[in-house]
Image 1 (tube, each protein chain N blue to C red):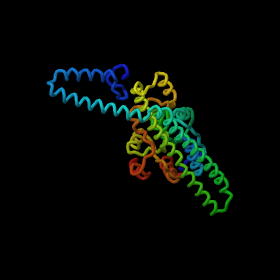
Image 2: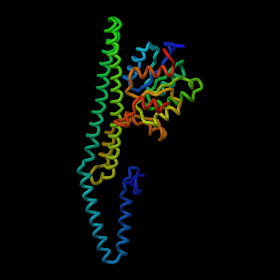
Image 3: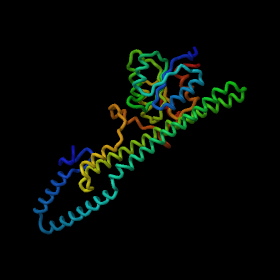
Image 4: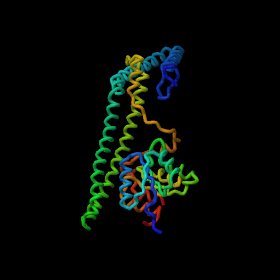
Length: 128
Length: 213
């Protein structure tokens, strides 16, 4: 079954330019129900209060990193199954391993292109 | 531990004057118990050591750590912050233009629409640079702040020799920028914050996908 393109998506990054880029690339895929957070703490609150179908998050943020946000999501009874894609400049092996062990759904390294984003969304959500 | 209070070594690794004084007393006691021939040898070695310390002190004073602390480091971090701000502003202008083109594209005929659409996507992808630039600069700023801490420790340790009064030290401390607050993280998670990599260390998406499985 094709993905519902009205799926609510939360994108998290402390750089507003990156939020804008990801939003525009999602819009090109007709995924327009997008909300933004600029740090892990406010993202976690939005996730707990809302009803999101996907999180796309940066890693390197303060005070809560994307990895900590992922761990909080996976520890939350309501959120633990939520698809979570990390988009980050952190590309060392230990980063990928740590994210995978924490339960990330997929991992995109910056700089990324539109096709990579589309492929990872398909792998996590299904065809759309 | 504060080296000025006579403790052995402070948190910056600086040996305090109290510890040095005790070490010198120990050496003098040993020298007095040595044979005259050995005493002369020891005296010559101590004289060399004293000369070396004096030359090192003069070299450090010549670096003018107070000037580095008061103006050069703040100037560097100000410039780097300005770079991040200006590139963010420029990227915003580029994205404004790209979004306008994207809104116009549906009004074009088939081939033109595709060309403009593809070009807009390439612009969005290229604008990744601003995020990576910001992260690299943040890393540089952190390195500069680490240097600033070392210089600060040097000034504190040498303030007598540099002729700084206590109120001058306090004035220097007020020049330092306030670091961004951060939650205490485990050392393991902090070790994972490396930012964008260079050259062979920078993994491609294909390598990441292989790791991810």
